[in-house]
Each structure stands twice: as C-alpha cells, then as structure tokens.
Image (tube, rainbow, N blue to C red; front, side):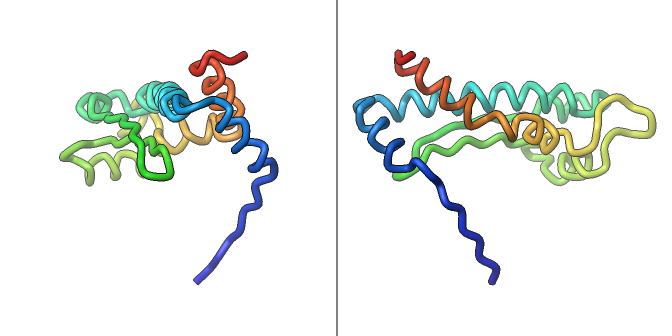
Length: 129
C-alpha cells in the first residue's frame, strides 16, 4: 500500500489563531467553504456541455460539519450519475459547446489560490481584517 506524508508548517500557529476566534470559527469556515465551492460550481456549470441541459441543472452543493472536519461536496448528475460520468469523461458531442472534465477543470483552475482565498474569507466571515 502506497503511503504519502504531507508536512504542514505553521499548524500550531494556526491552531492558536483559530482558538482565539472563539466558538464561531467553525461557522466562519463552513461559510467560506460554501462560498468557494459556489464559485467552483458556477465555473463547472459554465464548462458543462450546453447540449446536456439536464446535466447542467443537476448540480448539488453541500457543506456540512463532521466531528473533526468541515466537508464540502459538489455532486453532478443526481439519479443519472452514470450519464454524468460519461459526459464528464468524454465531453460534448462533436463540435458542441462545453468541455470534457468540466468539474475537474473548474477545481484545477483554483487549486493554487484556494487556500489563500479560504483564509481571507474565514477572516472576513468572522469579522476580522
């Protein structure tokens, strides 16, 4: 089984900052995750093949708290998940508008900036500057 390790520097400082925020920091984080996922979802919808109108309307964004984490999820396809997967992997019909990997590409577009943007939103949502 392959194993990878990620070292996060500054974790102790981050914990101290979060503790200083008080009990409402989780709400600020949850709201920030929802705001950022909304941007990703809107971009993904714009990238979704337009001839697949049903698919473009099937996005479902949820953000919820777990015991030790806040989870954000974007689902596409609803009951037609197999169809959504096919369109995602293969793209639009020949020459049609939209692109393959529409959700993946929307995520990749923000991959390098999302941490900083989340941090800024958490501060803003908690009333910090």
